[in-house]
Image (cartoon, rainbow, N blue to C red):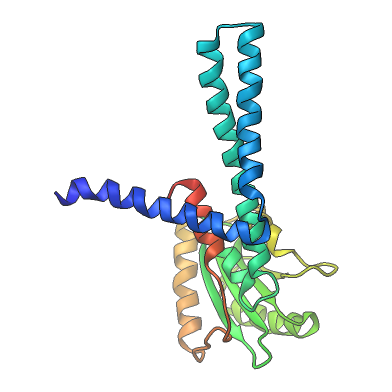
Length: 232
């Protein structure tokens, strides 16, 4: 019985995620429902017209429905992502929320370093090596990043240590582009080397004081919204 219930629970969970994503998007784009309906109906209408002109209708109508649904889903996904980024932008921990959408093969540790001024450094480990992502006041964050890079280089064992400042200023990476930027970094490490590197980083983390994330909302809607659109 439990096995039969699992698919239903998964389907219900996904439906809840989609509804939540729609409500999130509707806050910033109240007409999103009409836009999506317009896209769907517009494509169906074109398919019906194609059926009358070329025929047969029995082929064109299902094709129009399928293409209309696909187009509306793609547009909805983009609008959900835009709304989710708008919600987290400017909040402490926004970069961490974006980084946690990285898929398998990436190890994300939010807030490995935090200052009393809420400047934060997050760490990502993957095939490009160690990526340190700082967010906060640019001049302070760069100093914090430099200090963290020095610590990480001691245990990196030759693995590259890349520093990134998340933001919209010159030389900074917008959080909307952050994950893509990280994923495009050159892959230089093998899985076995990454495993070994993670063990050395555990030793580094063990000797540093535990630092909590700054107080305040750090929404997880970005990850949830993307999961909903991917069907996970």
